[in-house]
Image (tube, rainbow, N blue to C red):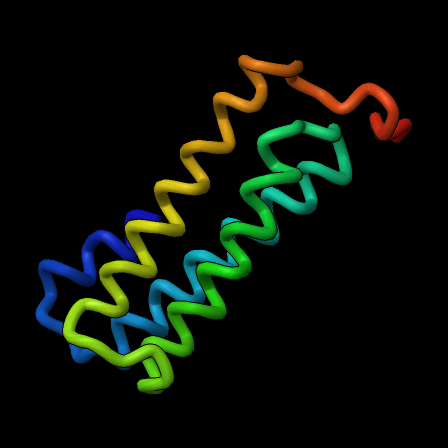
Length: 104
């Protein structure tokens, strides 16, 4: 995530910025999905797929499929916002999904 934030200060091209965000979101999404499979953390079940969708959307913005002046900014902000909103799910329900808790 930090590498993505630094892209705004470097003045990189849209395609390179989108590539960096695509890799960052895919990396974080993979980590969340692996964590969800390992310890069944509820927010990871939500944020993992959200981050993967954000990676796909960032790639689409980078190649011009999602066009518009601020398309990449919208993708980044919406993806990060939805990932952050996955944390209250643990406060409302419970921290772990009891039925799918891994037995490693």
